[in-house]
Image (cartoon, rainbow, N blue to C red):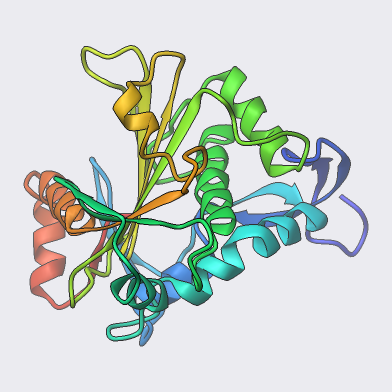
Length: 272
């Protein structure tokens, strides 16, 4: 560590250059603030414990230049256009007044390519960056996901501007269709699909769901929905976001007595 500096020197996980490492977030700091804007505190719920804290999950991971890159190419746009509080969700509002491309059991879908007010490149970059960060480091109080060395490297090259979105990867993006958004965030989780030959991971932010599948045998119907590879860059407006949030939180809270106590005492319960 250089004298007078709080940031250690090391190899940046993204550009692979040696330099001062910044305190990187797994989820953007603004997400935490929006979970409980009054106190800047949140309740962390894991499989084994539950506690109220203002601490954010960080690690010395990236250099300053790469931090700025992730912010410029994804985070900034998503934070500006994603959920900003009840009644203030620009991306949802944009989709609600846009022409529908079609409907599936998962909800309405839109051709994001060329849709005014929707930047699919920024959305895909942001989603990919969080999944990559979750896999390239073991973060405290989060489920470690393992994309495998092959895909960690392919996503690193994509995020660093060295290659396109990985060929054997599918990213599907859902935006909440409800009038009131559940204010919960869930770190990336998932693994091998049961009876499947590929892996699937999920990331939930308030009003947004990112699903990432990787593998050489991803089903064809899933590939058609890809926000990165499909010709029209599909994006969904769906109830699936809220449904999955509710399911995952209930699963954790059912066996966690402390979580119930905190919820009853008025603390906002968030799975982070």
